[in-house]
View 1 (cartoon, rainbow, N blue to C red):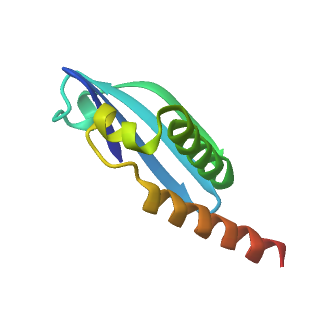
View 2: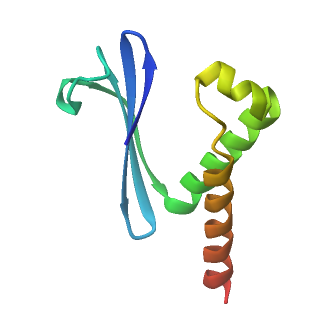
View 3: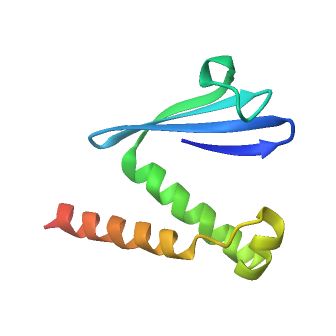
Length: 101
């Protein structure tokens, strides 16, 4: 689960996984500290895990290309998650190789 603040509104992403399937829910909350049950679901989907992983990798690659890693921090107040992104990329690649074997 993760939240994106758009003061005072927050958008909370909730991820569930079961086997090779994932479920994603996006809630809009009046305040980031609100419980999920106070949120309004604005989007949800069931996706194959691979589709979700590929979308996350593509989105972060696009953010890095568009803004640059050095500008990321000034825009979002955090360092670009390069280490996490590369770990996800390695794990997904290893899983694909394992599944193809």
